[in-house]
Length: 336
Image (cartoon, rainbow, N blue to C red; front, side, top):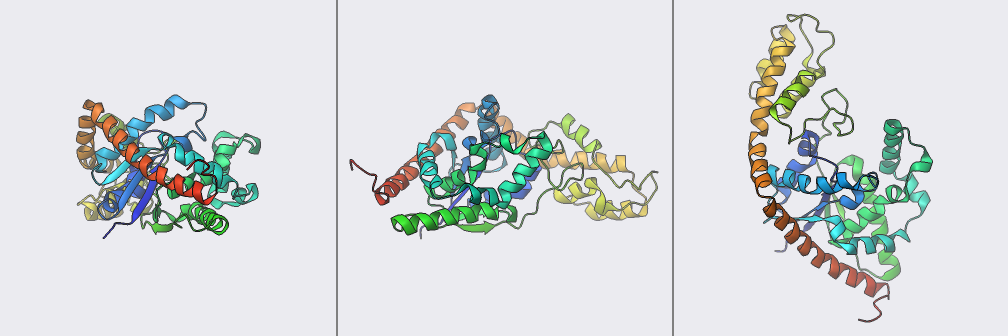
């Protein structure tokens, strides 16, 4: 029985952090066992807000590939490919752009939220929002449909993007005849991972993340600066672990001593420094298998290159067939 195709992607703008791992990537490792899985390194989408820093995106492509391989993405089970190396995606994006109004893009809740975040972080005016950034949901629809993705792993905050893709597919099929597969959401039950500072989101630009590539000294420094219960002043003051990021990360990585951590914290028998030092030890242990795999791939960059080449070639074969069918439906296959 043929496996259903699942398509997901991530922008190469730096190393993966714990938020990526627990929020999405851990799920991808499971999905590759059950589905025909395509994982896109979305460098074109990364350029929508890094267009003036192409070196950052370029350097992040292989770094991201190494991250994904190190956490357990298996190139024998999942197709790992680079978005910009599939020109058919760009073609589909152009075709689909005729099916979406600017007003509809501006109403997309995910886009509205990201524009608001950009303004808050960088003080950007609406005039600085590029066509590429506003239109990336159209590009994302091209990503999904190029590989006939039936299922797309998303969190609830990404549902508006998938709904826009479904609208594009529906409109295309109505105008040109049934050609494209209408994708469905594969909802993840993973919640958004909080940052070390207590922010509801761990993010690269927020400076509150533990990266999977961080060395021991960096991990130690970051955890020692993590936010704890502000009401705990003295070492023997009782505290509330539910508002402590150190306790949050103890739970996140599955510390087998978690009950003791909780009870001692509430009883005032555990100092914050001691608790942080225990977390440092546990975090380094947790990341060790990933770190060891990373060292292997960093020593053998030619293996990473070949995995990316093979995956991209396979992905392009699929996308080429899709664009052939799309052009036929649109009556623009002039010399076939």
